[in-house]
Length: 579
Image (cartoon, rainbow, N blue to C red; front, side):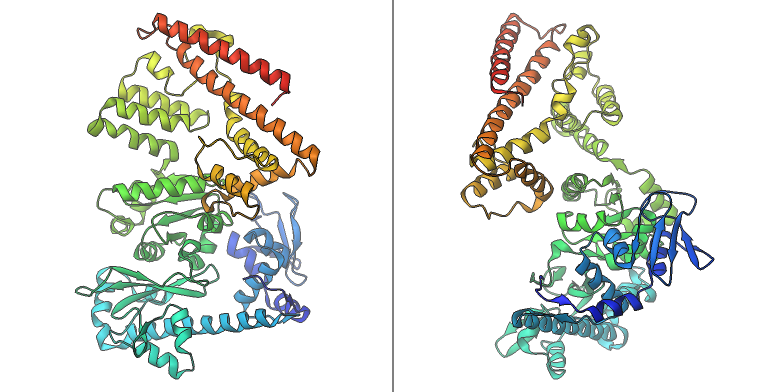
């Protein structure tokens, strides 16, 4: 929610007075050592063994003599949480219970603030009602028994604020209205649905799981049906301005400190998996609020750690979820590992064998490429070796050159018993035959430039007001076409990072006729360069066949044709200027 009003100076001072910088740093690094009025800790901004991060508790200032980071209370929160200044103040105010005052608010903003406060209070009151009902109501006996059966102890029930909703039509709605909450507020908050005689309780007869944001504020509920109950197994609050499933990670408010301290996050599928992992000491565990990680969830994790373990079911749906999530996570710069769960087991099942068993599963987690190759090689049994080869080739071609890719190439060649020629063609356009020499090697620097060149091409199209080639039909190209027609078109949610780079490249052209001419020239050059790279791939593949039994006279004729076509494009590129 964007507000026009400024945070009052007295509120800033109140936040600064109440907040404890040492406590905030120690939550990330562990206890520090007090000496001469300072606290010395390991730096939360870089890896080190000897503490070089000095905090002055009274002045609330910090300096790292290792990496040079320095600043004050608000600087630390902005840097560590990746927040703007107002967001950092709000974050600290929430943590330390300071009521923020704002100046110069419009009436609309004040109304929105007042309404949000009412919804916040309502959701917290409802969560408390559910908690107490689970604890003491006779009707909740079966729910308590179910939680005991799942191994969820009283401490975990309290920590995660689990509750139970009465199996009445309007018990919660009636209690809330008696406290002064309106029927419309109950419906807007997702606690109730509209009934013929007024609001009716949404989560009747279900175990409730409060769904909190990163600051621990209740934003909605997930509710599990009891045995013999009606409706879906899990029922969530409806999407609203306040509750957006794609933005939340279950348990993040309780996992933040552990994620930051251990520099890793464990992402699982279910609420009870998170609860079981926390109870077993894996407090860095959170759950995705759907079948896959989203851009918003990844951004939250990226603020705290650089390594994420994706721990999904071994079934096809679980693996597809892992694939989608790891693609988003890798684009953000996170290191990703895939935890392979045994068929039919979830993390809670592994924990029955002890924490060491789950830690061993984490230690055996696969890098992304190894996971993809595992799935590809599994096709041998169902679709045959050719299908497995094609899938492996696709996975390897999408991966940057490096030791991991080379290791997987050797692995695929061994499992599929490939000839040298077939192994050489696992990565399109890359020659591995020794006779080629330096002159015949592929140009990895050109291929490494391709993703960036494509973004630059789309940026040039945007500046030149030219729609990308209709043959290119992915989300980014579709967005550029829409933006050429309407400059306010929003970027695709799954490609925000690439969209930001496109806009940054577009800004380099400036404005006016000169920018338009430069963008048109650049777009043409980049199209030609892309054509040359595609021909390079085709030529390299034909050259790789030189010593194979598949090589024919037709192959030689095709090779000559491709070389002539490449020469024409190179001449055209030279006359038009370098790409």
